[in-house]
Every structure is written in C-alpha cells, then in structure tokens.
Length: 363
Image (cartoon, rainbow, N blue to C red; front, side, top):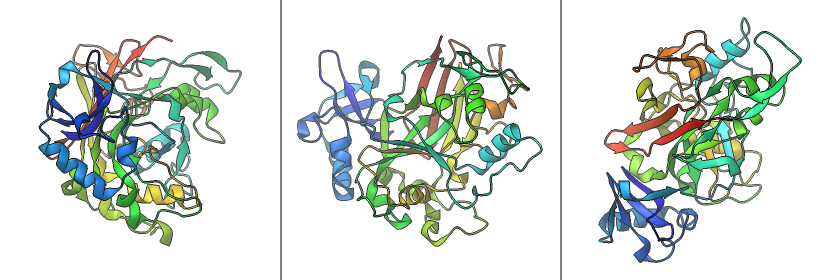
C-alpha cells in the first residue's frame, strides 16, 4: 500500500501519515500541510505539489508506527458526495429486479453517467459500525400501506470513489482531459443500502433515505500517480457519447476487487469493466456549470461483473434474497443480519488499496 491518510496515537493529535505496507510514516515534521487533521490542505495544492508530496513521503525519515498501534480518522473533510450508476452489469441486474419484464436500462443510461447526490455528513471512515436504519417499507408484492421500522433488507455496495483536490469555478465545466488536474486520488467505498426502503421511495426521484444513513470510505487515499500502471482502456460504448463526454476511455483502472462477509469471500470482480470512466463522471457532474470543491467525493456506483460471483451487492448475489449465499461457517445470507461484518478490498498489481470494513449493529 502506498497512500496518504490521517492517523493518531494515544495522547496525540490527528496528522498526515504515509502508509507503506504495515507501517505509517509520520509526516507532521514536514510542517504545513502535514500537521493537519485532514488531507484537504494538501489536496488543494495541485499536481506538482502532489508529486512532491509522494516523493517526500517515500524518503522521509520520520517516525514509523505499526498500523496496529494507530487510530485511523476520516482522511478528508467531505464537501459533497455524488454516487453514480456506472456499471452496465449492475444497472442491468437492478433493472431486471425492480422492473421485471421491462427494459432493464432507462433510456438515458447509455448516454450519460446517471447519479444522485448523497449526504456528505454521513460519510464515515472504515471501521465505523453501521446502524441498521429505520424507514418506510411495504410487504413483498404489496403497494401500500407502508410500515415504519428497521430495514429488513440491509445491503452493501462495492464501489470505487475519487476525491477532488483542486476546485473549479462555477460555470466552468471540467472536461475529460482535465480530470487528473483536479483529482487527488481514489478510495474504496461501501455505500450501504436499505433495499426495502429504497424500493418504496425511489420512484420518481431516486434513492434517498435508503442510502443516506451511512457511506463508508477507506482510511487511506491512493494518489492517482501511484495508479498509473493500472490504467487500461474502458469497454466500448455504444452509442458513442456526445462530444462533451467523449474521451477519458484510458482511465479505466485494472483493480481486482473482493467482498468478504464474516470471513467468507462472497464476490470477486474488477473495476476495469465500468462502462462510464471517472473522467466522464466528473465531466458530466460539471457539464451544467456546477463547481467542484476540495474534498468532493464521487463514487462509481456498485461494481458488478457479468459472471455469477462477481456482483457487488447482496441483492444481486442472492437475486433479491431468492438464492441466499452460503458462508464458510455453515450459515447463509439473503441480506445482512445484525453482527455481520463486511470488508471490501482492492488491489492494482502490487498496489493494495485501503480496505473498507464495517459491522452491522441493531437499529
């Protein structure tokens, strides 16, 4: 692992660290912006400063602390949070589950990266427990009336997110070829979802309370520069996107992904198959003139593959609970139960991304 994060040790203030393997290099002696409790000041400096920061981190002779002796903190102050829907396989699976017998994809899906705005205040660092949310839901097959209570279909979502460093001006879109000028790095994301709440509320405006209760991110942000060798060409797009979204196809990332549930690996996939790449996601999000700010988090949406066992959520793995997954402890899961622990992992060749873990606690 080669990544920046925020850490502390007993009796000390949070500060910037550089993680290499199982050790964290304390960078606070380098002065501003490394003595702060978030990466935002560093992220705002731009590409040349980021390259210098990586070089300094790799050669700094500051104190090294074993990972097991530190406390990790949310690595950046989240300004805004956007979640996309960029996996063709995931969108198709969900369309078939939610609209059986109909066209899985909505007409706009192949023309633009569909997304929704989440709640920045509910983004938390890996390891934070996830409390089962309350919400309105209806019985299977029913349309009304709803009941209010704890979600019965709590789910995980395996996603890859990118973090904005350099802001943009209002009214000035960020084209696909300027992506790397603005984006500091990537993190794994678990956008926890309450499927029963989501299904009841989604039409016509999309996800709201079924997803806004918590989103978990890795404690370590992997800089884009570290992932240069993982860049590959994205899958073909048909029809070709409009000119403002054309390009950015060489920014698919060859990242092997894995989901572990209570110690059992239930899914393996790869991020390289995402239909919409990160530069296209950023270009679309700013195409109407909306500015981005330092600390904005934009996530890919659930990453699923075409093969069984590569789906990035339980609702897909279990066909909405009809085919529960078997765990190595002899139990099965249709959806998450209280006490379940989920860990998301990613690796790009020799570069390991920071994992994302969380344990479900009762409503």
